[in-house]
Amino acid sequence: MKINGRYLGIVAAMCGLSAATVGLITNVAGLFFGPMAEEFGVLQGAASLTLTIANVCMAVGGLFTRRLAKAMPLRVLLLAGVALLAGSSALTALAPSIAVVYAASAVKGLAAGVIGFVLITYVLGKWFRSQLGIATSMAMGCSGLAGAIFSPVIQGVVAGMGWRAGQLLVAVFMVVLTLPAILLVPSCNPEDAGMVPFGADGAQAKVGETAEKSDGRVGVDTMLFVAVVVYSGLCAAVSALPQHFPGMADVAGLGASVGATMISMCMITNTAGKILMGWLCDRIGARASVLAYTALTAAALVVLLLVPSGTPYVAAALVSGLCYSPATVGLTMLCNELFGRRGSGIVYPVGAMACSLSNAVFSSVIGFAYDLTGGYAIMLVAFVGFLVVADLLVLWGYRRKAA
Image (cartoon, rainbow, N blue to C red; front, side):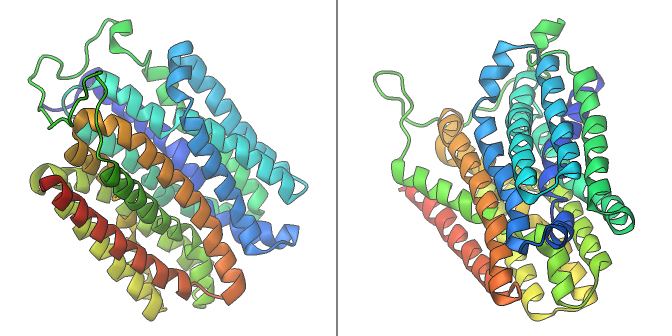
């Protein structure tokens, strides 16, 4: 059954929302670190702290999404969210100090958390019974596509007109990308529009459920729960690296244009990799898919560490874009396979929170590591270690489930 008609419009709208709330916050942020640090006279780590603040607030904002979505019409929620998103970017462009940028980043993160991934998965879960996996992976993948498409454009504006003009352009893009969701999605519930969820009449695949306690609560293996949350944090930490590709290219003497190209290549794989992982998980399972992705990502990081030259750097950046999938699509599928559909509803939100917080923390850790060492080698080595540990947790998790 192919997604078509009104339902295809819902997916397209969620793709735009993903690009606006995640792609234009996390996936182009690295273009502004250097120019902001230079103008405000602060260290690179202090500039990258803007993304850390945004990601932490994004994690907090997501906690209120469902409550707000039930309390007000979807279009009102989206209009308020995009107003805060675009307004905070405009405020950043006018900021007289880094402190004001921090405040604007907090507002931007809260707004993106409310109308970002949590809302997207909530809406798609209401509108789709079949093909939910591919619909979700397409929407998540567009967060990377935004980076691939808009990074060169924004980099050109930053280089020609300054980083403040670049922030104003980001604000415009946010409004444009959110418009389809405002115009095409009438409500979180298709029934409110006189429709039924896509595939509602078809048989739904039954995912193994976790044990249910006598009081009706779902029982979750605590040790396995902790393992998945730690796995989430480790994988999300690695996904903080691509925002520092411009700095890595500069350290290697390759120039800003190579850094922007590296981000674009990485974001292309970010998008395609998520869709491919969803397809692979359906055919070979989440365990094999995650192990393959993390192995390829680790290999790319080794190339970035050992071969600091143009073509290998760009090629490694292309492959490293796979790092986003284990913490997004991979996390979703692992939760479903290890905990069942009901157990996943308990574990996944905590894993997603761990992803947001880990990415937030390591966005700044990488910057401060650069300030201390003058390079990125120590973080590349650490991230290879993170991926190895993440793989061991996955293998242990499936063995524990089978025991």
